[in-house]
Structures are given as structure tokens and as C-alpha cells.
Length: 334
Length: 291
Image 1 (cartoon, each protein chain N blue to C red):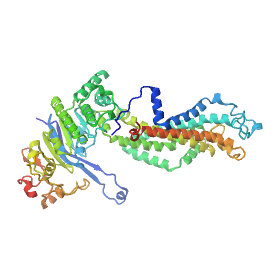
Image 2: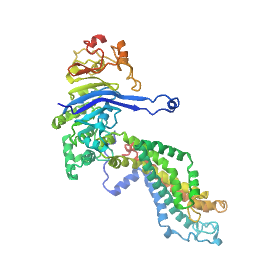
Image 3: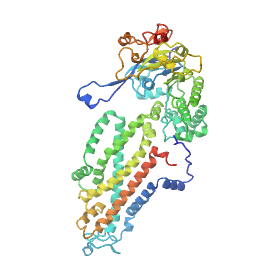
Image 4: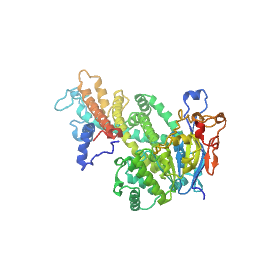
């Protein structure tokens, strides 16, 4: 089975505007390595969870997949079609298959347009049907995401965060895309509402055969919805595996520390919390060798010398760590 | 997050106007004051008492009386009639400058916000324009093109364009990062519809406010230009011209300066009140404070 989405060697560097002094002194232009070589694929109807702390580049990956930013290097292939090579017109056509739901339900709807207009916008853009048909479809979408169809003529400020997120989902769903990029779709919501929205997303996935790229900063959120999970650190994927394998037998020390931060509702589980020291290093000047070594509990001299590749350790379980194969890491971590 | 609270929709148009006047008294006062000036200008041919261009040396420097309501000037022309007609010039200049500056600034600002190379060039030009005092710039342009009402409007508008362009550019730059704009792009919205649906509607509020300030400052600038003799031709009864003519005899006939001066202050105050009210009413940060 060929994958729906193939991302190969994706790189996105943002050039910082040179400061006057730097320019006068002839210093090199500073570059933020937001995404620095990322590969993954998503199958039809599959969900990949993409997890990492803020600033690791996970949202940039999502935006590059949507071609809201132009990648510096690498290819994004959707359904056999390389998105980066498309002209403006072709790209607009390709957007039918590719939609997005953003994190902030307050900023993702234009305050001056009704929510019905927001959901109708993609339908109108692709000229699907008369105004009456569009309206019927919008009302149908509203009901499908659990909102009353009478509310289509209201303005966004009349809705709660969870309702607005449902509106955003209805808009993403309107064109029956194959892939929806969910950029932290529940991070701004209450825990109760989070669960409802995630259940809605899972129902819709089953009904429409959708594939999701589910971006989150929290492993607990992606656990229910993802088939596979990728963990990002400082612009790279450090570990990618099936959900169960990643959650039960994580190999990368960063994944372990993230997992140890997830609360477990079982008093018998040893808490073994791995707390990382320090902050995320600057993506302008990432550490040489392994990028995680400055905060890694098991760092060795080799980690400063060689950058570990993302290598397959066990049937599709890929890890970027020199010590991934060497038994239980917790022991080494002490 | 109380923006979504129960603002009951007003039942009728009259009720809505009343609600506006109660919520934003400055808007209501500004509109009422401006309406007086607009009516005076529009109905000037009906309101004048003595032909504003008639010279009658016998009545020169006459104090206000029942025939010359605001007195007469150096060559015996009626100050009241000339002040009423002056409203036309001031309103025309204010409106003309506001419309011209906003139209030009909007185009420059939109292009700057979306086209990178244009931005670098245009913004340096705007910086250069802003570095020249607006009066000096207007005087220079009038000197080049000759004094006429049209040239005065263009000359004042040129110095107001940079402010509008910068405002629009900053709005565009912040809108471009808004998720709802990115969502529209992701939904396949073509560029021209993106402008019409999402960008322009969000620039109207700040532009409306900016427009009132431009209006007020243009009225003042026109008066200053006329006062220093670089504005509308002296035959046209603009308030600046009236004040300039009365300046030399200010100590024996203050009424010649006083009445056009009051009209000028009244108009500028009206427009500024309106602008302040609009700013408060349209700024989303203030929305939650009004019930």
C-alpha cells in the first residue's frame, strides 16, 4: 500500500533579519533551524501523532505540509503528487485533499464573518453547487459536528471555544479531504471538551476515511487517537513507532522523559519521573553531535562527536540514539 | 473572554441610534457639530445675507450689526457670508484630502504588506516623505504647481499618505499571521477573494478613525497655507484666507479674525470628537466594556 502523505528530508530554515551591527561587522546571517531534516509518511485513513515541546518545529512541519510556508529543502508528496512543484493554480486545486484545523479557536475564525460563511468558504471557492445547495451542505456539516443548524448565521464571538473548534472542524471537513492537519486542535480547550472533540475527530475519521497529522505537545492527548507517534526534538524526529510500542517500550531518553511526565492513574506504578535539566537549546545554534545531549541523562562522549541517525531498531520502530539498542535505558539513567 | 456575552440585538434603527448616542456620546456630539458645518456649507447660497464678493468701501471694518452679522472686512465684504461659504472650502479640502490620502495609502500599504521587494522601496520613500514637515512639503508643491483648490488638496494629501500606508501595512502584516487567514489560504481561497473577504474588512475600522484625523488636520493645514499665502487663491473665501486678511487689522477689528477662527475650531473639534468616539467604538479591546 502506498502512503497518502510522504515527507522526505523536510527542512525549513527561517532567516533572521540581520541586525545593523551584524551587517556592518560582516557577520554571517543568522538562521533558525526550525525543521532540520524530517521524514515520515502517513497511510490512507491513518493518524500520525507528532509530539514535542514548544519551539521544536512541529507546527512548522504541519505548515510546510500545507504549503503555508515554503520548505527550504525536501519534498512533500500527497497521493503521489509532489506539492512543492505545483504552480499557484495547481496548488489551489490540490488543497481540496488537504485541510487544516488550528490550535486557537478564537483566532481561526474571521470575527467579521458569520460561522456559516466560514464553513461555506471552501465550498464556494471550489464552486460546488448553487448558494442554496451550499447552505444545505453547511447545515448538514454543522449537524455532523454536533452544532445546531440554526446557528449558521451567528458570529464567532457568540460561541464557546469548543464550539468554535467544531466549526473549524466542519470547515476542514467541507471539501471531504483525504488528510487533515490538526495543529494542536485541543490544547486550548478544557479537559472535558478535549475528550469530546477527540471523540468527534475519531468518529469523523471512521466515517470519511480521513487521515490525520495530529500535532500536540502532550503525549497523553495523542495516545487515544494515533496509530503511530513521532516525537520531535529541536527540528528532528528522535523516535517514531507504533503507538503501543512507543508507549510501552520507548527507546529514546527524550521520549522516556516525556512519558514519565504523563500522570498514570495507578498507585502501584513506580513513579520514576525523569526530569530534564535546562531549557530547549536555541534552534539558531543547536548543539553539535546529538542535539539532545545537553539535556540527556545518559549522554556519553560519543554523543558530542556523532549525530545519531534515525535508525530502525525493531520492525518500523526508529530511534535516533547511540544507545537505543542497549537494553533498558532506565538502568543507565540510574 | 466576555466578548460573547449577552448584547441584546437592538430592535429598530431608531433604538440603535439611541443606543449609540448613549454608549458613545462623543460620536453623537461630533456628528451633531459636524452636521451644523455641513448644513452651512451645503445651504450657503440660501444662508448668505450679503453677496460675499461685493466690495463696499463705505462699510469697511464695520462692527457686527443687523446687516453685517459678523461685521465687514478691510474692503467692506460681509464676513458672515464669507464664513458660510468658507465652510464649503474647508469641508471640500478635508474630505478630498482624506479620500485621496486613504485611497493612495491603502494601495501602497496593501502592496507593501504582500510584496516583499516593493515593501523595501516604498517604505523608504514613505520615511523620506515623513521626514519633511507637511507644511513645508505642501508649500513646495504649491510653489511648483500653482495655487488652486485642487492643488492644495493634492499637496496636503501627499504628506498624509505615509501615515495611511504604514497603518495599512502593519494591519496586513498582522493579519497575514492570523490563523483565519491561513485557514482561508488552506481552503483554496484565491488571492483577490482573500483581500476582499478577510483583509479589507479588517482595515476599515482603523482607516475610518485615521480618516477623521486626516480630515481635521487637512482643514487646519489648508487654513495655515492660506494664512501664509500659499493656499487657495485669495478670491476664494476660505477660513484661512479670511483670517489672513484680518490679521493686519486684528487690534481695531478683531471680529474679522474671530468668527472664521471659531468656525475653524468648531469643525476641527467636531471631527476630532467623532474620530475619538469611533476609535473607542471600533477598537475590539474596548468592545467588552460597553454593555
